[in-house]
Length: 293
Image (tube, rainbow, N blue to C red):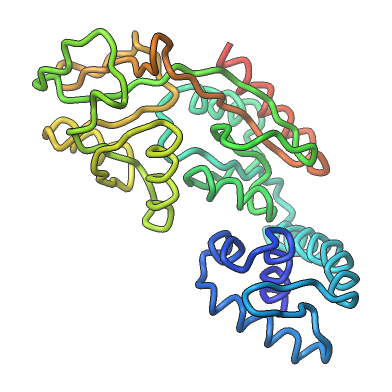
């Protein structure tokens, strides 16, 4: 029933079955069936359906508001039980952007683990939306992520840096000699994205609609695989968390990515829930911020 309640919450929150299904990574028909099953189990209707539209019933409104507290308490209970099951060992779970290639996180982790050797640090890797979902549902305590939506008052939104965008391309490619490049100039070269299979469509839409890449897209599971594809001349890779001065040998060239006369920029942030602001969360965030400075 917990999963069905979460599906119902997603439908109400998005005011859309299709958007809720996309958020929950299931089909629209499946999420509709799950909510109907929930209604049968409860014995009353949550949604009133008319053609392709719906409204939330009075009972559904009450159930939705109360279920938000119920699910929050349930997730916190599960986290606490997991902590007890782990012999009361203090743990810090951090979400890390799968395609991020800077060294700041590694340096902060090294400092934190040296200062707090008894704290078990767990790392969860993901693309932007995966990390957001982990943070929203309590799967991680803190994430290093790029900013793709407006800041929420529910979270601490610590801007770590405003990063310049680059692409990496084989040094053999004639384009490697350019001092800068635009997405339009890359339209005939495949774009290589580091993404899980589940997030490929989401990542493709972001880089196509927001960044402006119009070429075909190829995918790699991790940075090492992506860079091998770049070296092999299969395409270019947009890179995150890098500086132009960083060296990657003679096989790859790094070129600033421009839109018009300005280099494209992106915010990189540490996010955590305000109601989860514990000592170790803020301590690690502070170390991470200093590494960027």
